[in-house]
Image 1 (cartoon, rainbow, N blue to C red):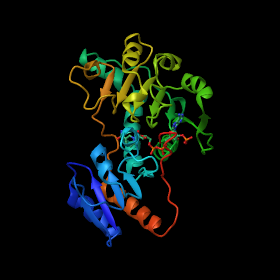
Image 2 (cartoon, rainbow, N blue to C red; image 1 turned 120 degrees about the horizontal axis):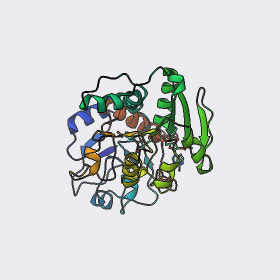
Image 3 (cartoon, protein in one colour; image 1 turned 90 degrees about the vertical axis):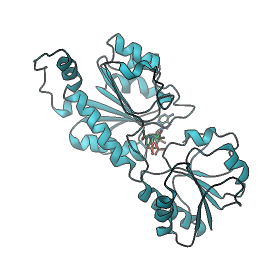
Length: 308
Ligand code: NDP
């Protein structure tokens, strides 16, 4: 079985060793132009040339949970199954990041930051219990569900929103566009863990940012295109929103002249909330390839019509 690996700049020896541990019979090779056709692709942001040449792939595995970049690829063969990573160690990392950001607002660290800049020694009004702080998680998939449940276990009141109806212990769940305005209106902090698809593009636009409860904060770890940056800046400048914690951006790296860099109500990080981990992701993909080779079904297959 031939595996072609496309992830320029990645330490191929580490990826290869992690994969072969679970699938020693495979031949694992970093893709080069002109290579013979392989059976399976393991890829991140593959080029058009990759798909133009690798015409015999049975399945392609994306080494990330977000498949927006691969679905945009014009040479992507129409019937090629694409498989996304399912958690593979990302949900735990995401929870750490989101808990930190939620606590930033819950414990008024934004307000203390402004006060420190101005040498102000002043205790801000406090005393709310975590249960009085309402966090909304948009996207209840492999990552969002885990995050929502762990935030609820921490003590926050948690609402979740997804495309299809869900029943999750300890979470107030909402589904579909019709439920979105009421969901947004009840939250102290909105966490975006959605994929970027045609249906979610710009989902937090000016109108929907206006529906968020005044004084709430936004945490975006999904994709930059989910949130309108000009509308966010306006909502922060008018005081409608309290702050934003951003890990993902429409253009990455974030251009040096972006106003987001210096806005006093924004904390930002360079798309690091949940990097792909080599060992668990290669174990997951190798196990799925073994299942496919045995004629068995696998989970995580992307629905190209939905875009995730
Ligand atoms: P999943 O595919 O498991 O889950 C996606 C969730 O989004 C599902 O709950 C789905 O609803 C919901 N959803 C999709 N479309 C809509 C819609 N139109 N309306 C309402 N809900 C919708 O994805 P993951 O949880 O694994 O990952 C989510 C995203 O997080 C990734 O696509 C990626 O963009 C981002 N990510 C970012 C990382 C980073 O480092 N910043 C790292 C990893 C992921 P339903 O349950 O009904 O299908």
